[in-house]
Length: 127
Length: 109
Image (cartoon, rainbow over all chains, first blue to last red; front, top):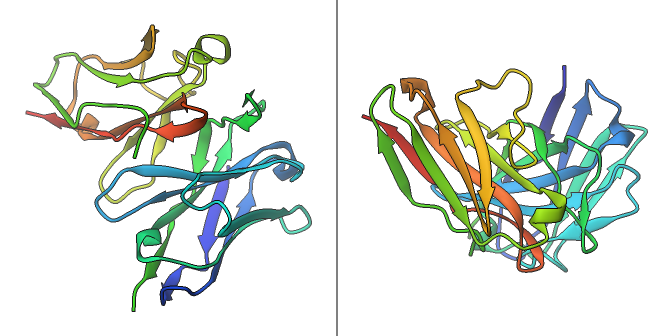
């Protein structure tokens, strides 16, 4: 059974940093792209970043480009999201998600099918 | 600011069929079939219900079906049930990036 467990959320002041983790189990981690999707309170879903199975390819939504960095550690079956220069608008539940595969790339952008989701971790950016 | 447009809400009575639209798809979707749909119950994580425009994952009810016409994808729920009351999101490629639609709240009357 696929399991995705996010951690690392919490409260941070504007301008601060936070690292989210997503521990994965139940599938061959290196064979699947992984992504982060967030949801602000009372709002819709927003895709923010994706990383290929090998880790060699990454993409970011414009809203976080230059501030967030996605990575993965195959030895730990874990994906990370390093978030810097956080703003109030980054307040959201952050979900990690596993791509169904095989990889689909449209004009250089990985377009995943979010087959499995974690339960999310809440990030609150406030002074 | 979603590039994909969904109706904010759709409602129906038990047993009826409803359709949720997702407008603004890229013409590349015709080639790559990159349309998926997600169901999210209140306070829960989203769940994949349709991928590659028309395919259903194992375990998803056949009351859910997907289609596409031109630059608009659609999700149809047949034989509406109380448990279908949830938010629904499309996801696809448009305007050079990937987007979720704004979401549609389905209410079972």
